[in-house]
Length: 554
Image (cartoon, rainbow, N blue to C red; front, side, top):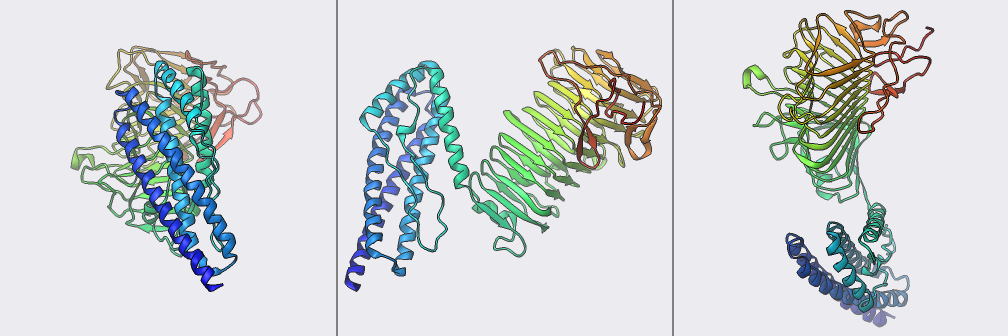
């Protein structure tokens, strides 16, 4: 028995080496694909020929791997339950998994490249793919070999070129590649890992998880204070979540890459239940978060006392969503340094949405500043409650913008006269429409403006409650069903609770706002509930002006 076992073990070792060689060949193939990526659009035909060669190589490798897998499974059967096989078989199993993983990455890469081609190029690809399918039908399955005592990753089912779309028309090609990509994303989800960080865990710091996590993973960070820990997250489809309470990142003046506590570079990233504070940078823009990917969601986060809160650069495809979060006191001493800090600063991106959040006290800076092409500020509390800002909302490049259901308060010592500034820096002559619907604006600064519109298009003001002394609108606008008054009956005006009391002048003064010129529904469906909450707006009779519907007897 011992002689037979030794013989089988040698066979396994030989097979393992063969798998290693196959894996190395696939890595070389992948490197060739990466090299071609930069020139794929300029040298389409040449790239298609190379892709065909890669397809042939991949077919051979898959056949080889399938044969090796069959031999391994036969050897496992012969070895029975002998525990001495576990270290080697786990290595073999991991090698097989890595090979399958590389194949999946290659397939995803091909699909992404094919998705971007023109209809004419798609037709050429169609012919190549049809011929490829006839010549190299790949239907072999690859799966990770389960090992006793090991928590194996989920099986990888057919990761093959034969599953790539075989269209007859460009539209059909896109539909099928979309379905294939959806399958790949589902595969990523199945393979995703959970990482756990905390003072009592193996990973003590978020930065340690950042070096280990992969695309699609979730990092759970225990409620604790993580002092001086800053890091970069390059992964895509990543979820970063505080667990059991706030995960508190206290930078103590440090930053990653000279930018922020967290520099997030991946696409489709979600961040939840995290506190960011204490970032500083030599450029005076040390942020809680610097975002450099395509899609970011911040949910229930608290970003405060940094030089910047959230800071992003320009990307025409980038989208940012902030909901249920608080930003405050992210600022720079302007009188000392001559620079401003902002609670939220969004660069030239595609879409910015801020919802049921509490943004306040950006001393001398801006509470919300966005250069996005589309801006949606919905049901927020934005104000100078302890320290005066420069602007409450600054949209310096214009953009199609919607402020619906917000409450805004400007202090008497605010640096600028305008509460909301629109298109002050760029695109004044390019007509962009700003919609202010069912907002409550309270202005304590004499001689100031509720809105300064620098754009040629009229701003649309509907159902707003505008409270303040000698406050006006600057620039072109059209107003309907707004209530202007020096004061109003609020639940607690001194405490910034702007819900209406019985007898308030705003009751029943609004009207159905309809839709925007581009088809966006303008009706306020919700109300902000402090802190960081959201409630359905009551519907009992005519619409009230302002951010809050009176819920009592009329």
